[in-house]
Length: 121
Image 1 (cartoon, rainbow, N blue to C red):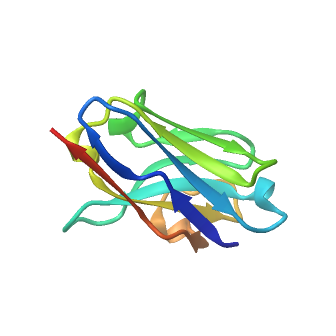
Image 2 (cartoon, rainbow, N blue to C red):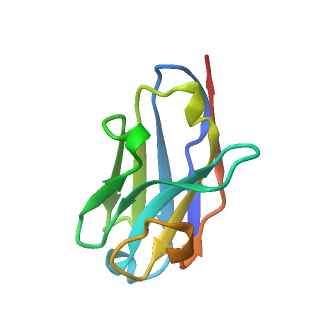
């Protein structure tokens, strides 16, 4: 599976962005998909995930502000980010796992390239 992320950019605090991740392959619907992020000088961390059954999971600090969704017909997963804060600034990576869920970096089978999100205060 190859993953291509897009949608990052510069936004003011309180604003919104939608990230997209297009996947290759014909078995996209059976993959759990997730978003991780890495801020400068920090470890890559889990942000949100959606299992292939449709269950969703979120990092506590983004719950209620971010929403993950997927369109299996388009082989694409999205991350809608609202009420952005300066601490959301990071490179965001999409990830895929041929498994139930993808909640940790160790569970990831495939990574996309990152897309930079910068939130100005």
